[in-house]
Length: 477
Image 1: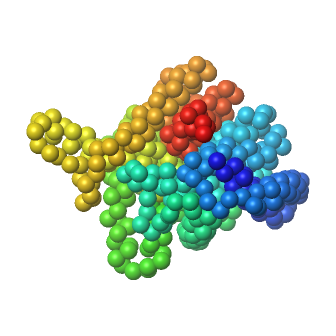
Image 2: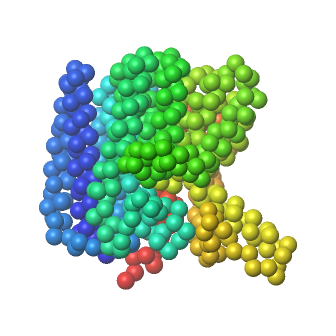
Image 3: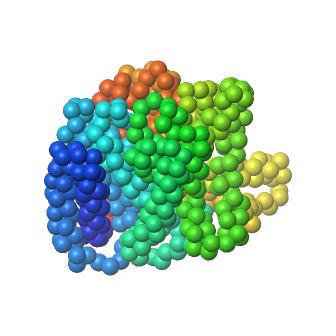
């Protein structure tokens, strides 16, 4: 295993964290929060030096790597980055322990959007810090999906593969920077456009900045407590809904639109099967919300349905999507968005493939002598290729069940455990408030928050990847 190459890229991750800390330090100077600015500047120096040392040690690393190396990098990245990102939180008086600081950092970097903190009492530099964590986390989620998860699925159906971003064996790590820059450029452009429209619609500049970064990454953390309608206009709410949907859309399709800039590529965006699946989920939520609230709150239901379907979960108004039956809302959110996006959940493409396979198997039961290949989007798919998806579905369900059990043992009631577990596993933190407003993350004990941290990391890493890494056979030569 190419350990030196793995450490090299973890060093690059530390340098990225240091850059974000520098930006937050600059924000602290602008906001005249000099103590916070000094804190971020000091941490940026320490983390940056650590990153440079690791990069220097690993500079003679081999130029090629295996998919097993990529899998180890994926897991260690999501464990290490929250560990570094939680350092500023340790200096907040509202954060009493390391476990809560790690929970906050993991929630931001995995774009879950769960928090125990009241944003009204936080310094602006910290609000900027966690918004930057969400945006950078969204970039890395999409980059890892395009590069590492695609490489791990070379022999499978290919729900993470892209015709636009192609890979060859042994070049996984070398493509991380190149593809990461493209995705960062795309998400920065979307966030900037969202910011501009929010400011034009009357949203305060700082709030617009934080919301733009959060929306494109489908993060869910907001700069103020309470309903968003208090500081975001109706048009601004619609802008955020579109931005969230772009974050949950297939990043290769979005990049193709930006690259080609013609009507045909724009048409393909709406015809993409995963995007049509997102629209179908929104329609189901809107119909259920309309039946629950009536026409008076239809606009709120519409924009909040887009927030939920994208796994962002913004709360725009007091009466909205939270009036939908909790079981239906949890089931739809667990489906998630596109496989090549910042959205969480099982992913729509997996569900579509499973239903297609199930339908073919049912037809085979009624016609056992007929040869019935599984066809999907004009392709014939071998039955063995579905094994990884069924295993993923089983692993996802198993983690959900074990998470509910562990949360119940930590002191939560059953309905609270189900809502909290679904929120963490689907990386949709605000889902808890929408389905179980009686309890918030700040009301939970440290054990419950620690369990939720593990669940949200499992949901973001992809559960099968974690199972593979912890298997003893993985580490045997």
